[in-house]
Amino acid sequence: MRASRRALLLAPLAAPALAAEPTLEQVMQALAAVPAQRSRFTEDKVIPELEVGQPNEGTLSWQAPDRLEKHTTWPIDERVTVAAGRLTYERRDRGVQREFALGDQPEMQALVEAVRGTLAGDLAALRRHYGVAFAATAAGWRMVLTPLSLRVLGAVQRITVTGQGNELRSVETEGGGGVDRMQIAPAP
Image 1 (tube, rainbow, N blue to C red):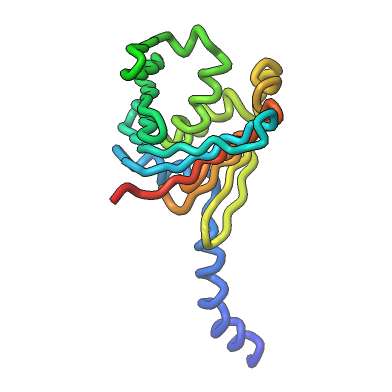
Image 2 (tube, helix red, strand yellow; image 1 turned 180 degrees about the vertical axis):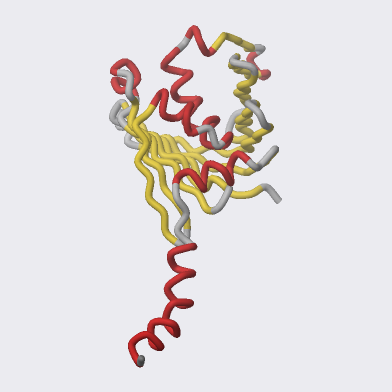
């Protein structure tokens, strides 16, 4: 009787710990439920040949079902927008605007999908391009995306995405001997 009574008393303490660690599917469902999001980012691109990081910062905007915009505001003003299967790059200070269909650039499509697919909560899209490893704790979650395409793998060895609840916190891309680290925080 004592053992069962102790188990009943300890059960509420154990249950929250188990419930606090979401599954990959639960995280994807939580992300999919967010119709729009705007965040600030700081990014550091480490290029081995330069032995110095190249920092930049700006905003990252998401609008369901598929609009993603990365607007770098410092040190240069440039904008990358993905919507309806097309990518647009703009750098107004140089009068540059380029647009192309992501389907014509499979490597770029896979890189875009790491962030867009995550924000959309689209696990099927992620799995079309990546092997997906997932781990969660009460403090947050982490996905490691490994490209399935040998062409993409030649440029990117892995992308690590971390988050908390239905928000991204970081995206780290390793490839070509360099690392791109983007830290993400909710916009004020």
